[in-house]
Length: 574
DNA sequence: GCCGTTTTCGGCCCGACTGTTTTCAGTCG
Image (cartoon, rainbow, N blue to C red; front, top):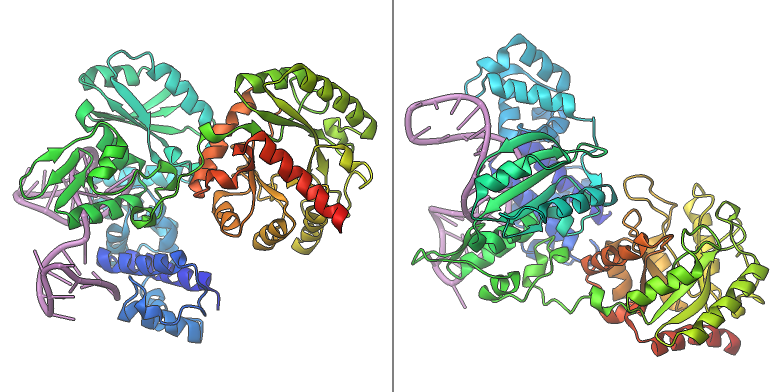
């Protein structure tokens, strides 16, 4: 029995309880039990007494054990008899929650979207107490809008909107300070909307200017504390602005950064100490005094907690954990994956080097595509040797940066590599990656990756799964096996910083770090602008609790050189 | 349904907003 199936079962029960309009705490008890299992690193077999886990009590323990034994439970079967399955998707309709749906089912026999629309058309919903004309209008509008855009948007698709808004917000004089919050600040891979927190003493003035921003397409709400607009963008992204007095800025920022689970844990912690947290400050329950803060560090410290970076505010677990120093953008000494006009880049070798110097990088690797990738004007042995000569000259010329002569070599569909072992040692840094035949089965893909990882001249595997967030899943990889192989053969695992990729994903990086892997955060830049993706990559690494020492491009140049030589050296000893 | 340094009952995070009411329940973040 797979732990994931048990978790899913508990969550399904929670959804049905919600539809039944059950007590909210009972519902969250099932969710909490599922979450407890999820967070526990052990497999089902390794957990001796499920009931001893905090959050799993007599009831949920019995359900879990019944499910393990029978593959189903009386609890869920009973619920499925009482609640029609067609109601489940309706929970996603804005304005409809469990309580209302339960009433619609029991009083009007609404079972799915069709019967919901029929009941609305007949005027039955409007006649129900607690519902009214507006409720019906809202429900129908939400139903119509559902499916016209994805539930959540890939991070990369909202970054341009964020950047455009920052430029405009900077111009509004009545704004004291502002910051992005929400899942964007936590660097979730997909986001629902953008949340900005704005500190101001003139909320009406600011609100007026916000609705007039050039990219605003529609105004959904405009009050003195909250302005919601829809902006021009691919999907009609909605943006929330929260307007607060400067004193409350930090606690509001914390509140709307979330996550929800993080906030719940923080409030529980505060409560233990006799405090109450809200977006307006930390209130001493006894005296009623409200404390506000100048920065988030003092906010956390006030409750006896070290600063928790926004990227790791997810499960709530972080509140009680000791948090190591996480990699930061200031630790980054170089970038080991970028392209030039020699293959499919937009900037020349000289241009990329000089831009990297302006970042203060100690080192970079020039890694153009290899000959197999003809669409990208991939380089053969001869052109790589020519490019290497130029790189050698550059290294002569500058003493503030070291340029590794590298390549991003294709792993071919049959599992062989694009260059032979007698050529590869000529290069300082060899990346191997897959750009073809994504539809092969997992076994074949793993053979390809394994060949590359084991090759003594391959230093790193780039974008290990080939995914494009929100667009394609990539090829099938047994990621745990991939990580183990990489650790065994001292092959670097890339975190590709391109916000479309973020590959390997942060959740797997966490596993990789635990097992002793070395990680590189690289931009895979094809032009100047993409070199800036490094900060997104670093944030993704932080989200996976990655420490600076795990990341090779935080190391001093000499350490990097030693690591690269060591891999080759091991091969000659064999 | 779960839990207990206020321990077997009575809480469970907090506040805004909406639409419905006439004091509040439901939903949302």
